[in-house]
Length: 126
Image 1 (spheres, one colour):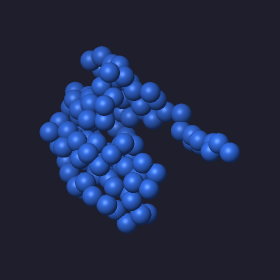
Image 2 (tube, helix red, strand yellow):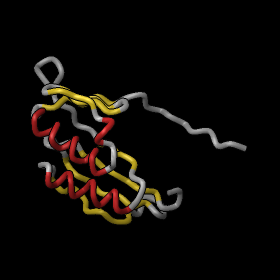
Image 3 (cartoon, rainbow, N blue to C red):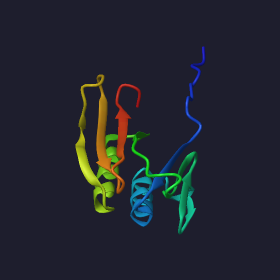
Image 4 (cartoon, rainbow, N blue to C red):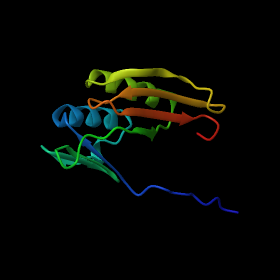
């Protein structure tokens, strides 16, 4: 029997008050996950397979969310965390095992707007 994959999100759209810094941050962390060739964007926007980033303004203020990306290994989690810090993010949890469930290896970085950006590798399924 084939396991059905359940997708509950179609896309995520972040609005940034620090767009120049946010674009540098997201390009760096996507590169750490091996996704740099799939990133599209310009001076005032960024897009990657359902992830959208653009400028916040009076009608659409800055986002405040927790967003988790999937990594394929512990090394990708570590590379994501390091890239996020080098690109202007703030440490919000160094790479390591978490007690959420067995084999949950993750790291957390605050992006330039203060969003809590996580990357995780599930060792039990990875």
